[in-house]
Length: 183
Image (cartoon, rainbow, N blue to C red):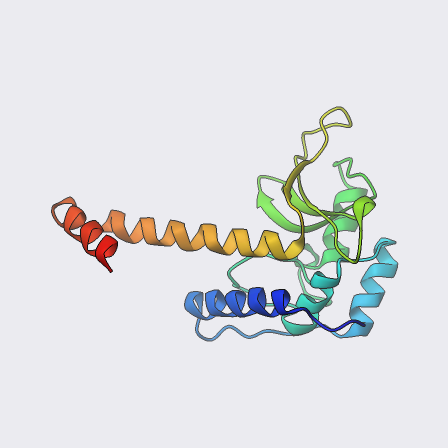
């Protein structure tokens, strides 16, 4: 097991900050190396190294800032990476075997590890449209798991700022924008 990179540690710190802002009492249930290995065997894949580090540090966390499936034996199976992948493959969705679902993007569409492109311990993240086909391949959304987490957290932070500004009366909006520019 290789040691987490500085980049991972920076993204993990950002994730922890977002989790604490969303719910100050967030409890992380880290996964073990045995749980990680068992999930890889069950799915017939190698996870990106950064996902392994993430699971060993955070594991399962209900109500976190992002919905990321855990290797832990969480209930219901829809939050467990093995359970959701088996459920989808055995169900009505034609998920290619090299795509490993790790997060729900809404409406039965998923973010996946494209394990066919695993290189130097990392693989790209793709968005898989459940209504897609072999003709329409999954859409690349990030070069790695860490890039995906960071982009998702930054997008949510920007949305939260916009939401806060939207809730302020329009009379004060220009004043606040000018004040923020001058800070």
